[in-house]
Length: 129
Image (cartoon, rainbow, N blue to C red; front, side, top):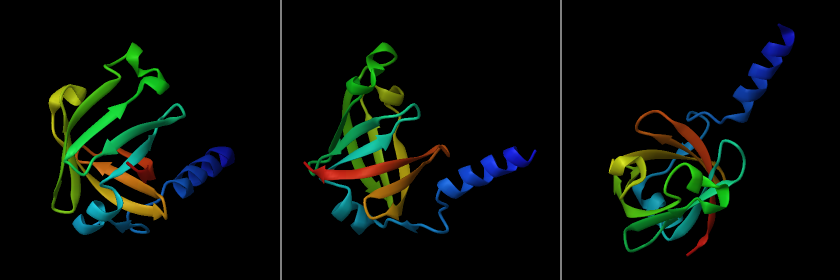
């Protein structure tokens, strides 16, 4: 029982809360995310890169993670900002459904994302494209 409590406390401490993190606003998304490669942490290790191009397009490539066995490893789409959320829609990923994300600054080059369906994750802000 004690070990379980310690494990739960460690997990809670490792996941930053929205209360402790500052939410990105539209102008910050444009200035700090757009025009960069964003690396999403993959559940089984590694990172999944997404390129938010200044032209309004977004593309990703999961070949390095071996996603080709499960889904189309590459896709392109569009991004936009709506009410301080970064939204995107790919051609085939997620059946082409649009999704929006609240973004929270965790560290200087790390952020937490919360998708409109409640899923969350961590990403690293990479170099300019």
